[in-house]
Image 1: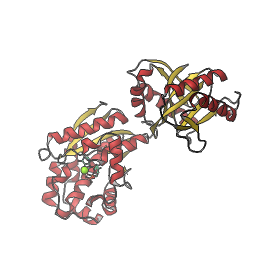
Image 2: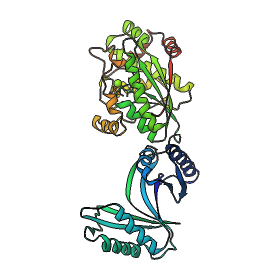
Image 3: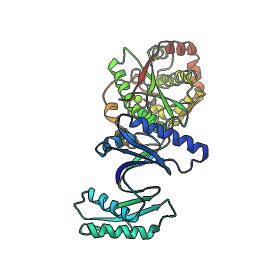
Length: 390
Ligand code: ATP
Ligand code: MG
């Protein structure tokens, strides 16, 4: 009898080559996540990966594995031979090891993958339920409808008995859904946007805009810190940093004051688009959420879309701030995001920003500027950072 970690993954809808590709990717990611640990066995058996290592390391290993996208559950399983006596003993040992000291209800769930094995699932569940009651009946009672402690038994090549089950993030492994360039500000939303697209399998790169010396170097450090936290989930990536100040100054001197914000955003998108095409990204990603601020109206979003050709993904568009904050807390970016540093957008804030911009007005304003030249100059002065997991 041995304790192992089991990892279950995969969207049920994936079939054929997609499925194989998905599994290979995810297995590579899992191996990478636990590269620092000594592993005694690592194998795949019918849709799950099993990892044998020193049980003392399980908590730390599970913490690392949890960050891999595409995983649904991670369990601590007790593996035993496929013989009734052994399964009974494993069930007893597993429950005993849990050290239960309060009353609880339980139910045994048998998943008989090996259909040749007898007894069949209902009898085996009853039999093992009997074992639990006999040994721990003073505290544990059966509840078949809503058990507090499900006991799972998978009958495969071996038999795996387990109670401890941790939820993964789900989604798809990074790299299975193309490449997206994230517009990463120092705020709460954009790291979350990068995370959720990463969870959907997108490889992430980032672009950040600052207005140095109007914004501080420490502000840029904060964005790098956020990028580092994000890379714990999406892997290492490149972050390009662009000084938007010359463009903001041009806009402020030549265009209507109320359009400063929206024009600034259009330049951000155009610069990001140019970089994305050059670096083979398929789409831009932003943390916009409808109605959150003056620039995030449907009219504002439409005007930005009309000014660029690349797909712009806005995964948070329909989320409330509280939902976004919940994710930010889960992925550990929240505390860094709320540190008070100037964002480049706040440097030139119009008193009454236009909330329903019209594309004709915006085009008229853009015609007052040397758009391509400004974009090329901004890109020529870019700084590039390699962001690595912490
Ligand atoms: P966030 O919390 O992500 O800063 P926000 O609520 O402050 O978002 P805006 O400032 O309107 O909203 O920005 C909307 C989106 O535009 C951001 O989520 C981000 O994707 C992009 N963005 C804004 N400012 C910057 C910046 N300085 N650098 C890169 N991207 C930015
Ligand atoms: Mg912001």
